[in-house]
Image (cartoon, rainbow, N blue to C red; front, side, top):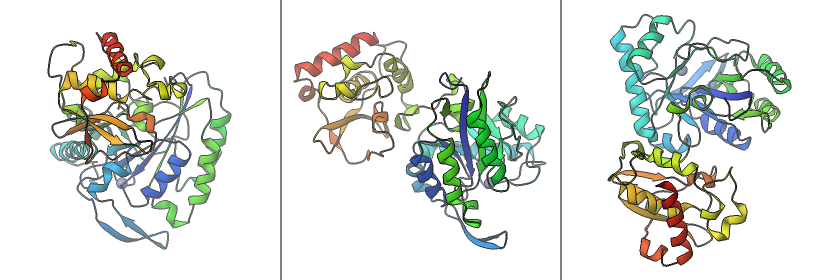
Length: 374
Ligand SMILES: [Zn+2]
């Protein structure tokens, strides 16, 4: 299930507080992936908060920074205004969950699929889970009760994480040690959740980093966001850069099986190879870095299908990295080669196919890609 591995680790952090920045730096440092559950009606609110007799900042992110800060991780819903859902009227549950999901989808540019029940205590029940499952686009709902084990959730709309990092810090470390040693016969998931501001209370940042160091970069563990580890292929969240690209549809019938940008990505995923990679980068091409050296031929092929324009980002080596813009939507099917580097997709240079394909070598690679797609 986890790209051929038996074990997976994922993280889930609530409320979208400013401490998420520091937490994301840590996750990025150790190549870990996390999901962040945000309240779209509470951006830029908060102030000092007293917890465990310590005053710490509890301030939520601003809407404008959400897309950039959480890029490379997953954003999920957490109610528009952090509403406690048990006993809440049905229409209000739907509004709180679905409106949050849609508002966040609009901000991040992909369809948000996840949800975490807000509030402490018994913050979930079968009724709320059923209402969400039947009336919203949410595909999974995390509760705040620890399971203490690594079993995969039986009911995705009301499941328990493994452990809460804050009040169960030592238990988390113990479970981490067990998990890295585990040689399971079936798929196992280690799921850690909390709030980033909790690291400020007893200043557990360094201890948490030690924990991340211990569990990260292991060949037998898959590291993914919640949707990566919980959802099937049809609910897959794509990693290529896209801003509102899910709205785009093919402008012609030349490739009948390709209707959306993700359809094209899935098809190219099987086609991109060393031969279609630019010669100067070919030595570095691999299955793991499949989008390397494929940008211009991919962008012009995407333009054949979806219309719009091809733009180029000037790179330090003097070459342009090409991507597509259709209306107010932007997509870059070969963005994954840049890893965590966040490219700036504003104010770039219009690219012309005549100039690119004046190079015979490049035109041939474009033809190769195009023929393979047919
Ligand atoms: Zn919360």
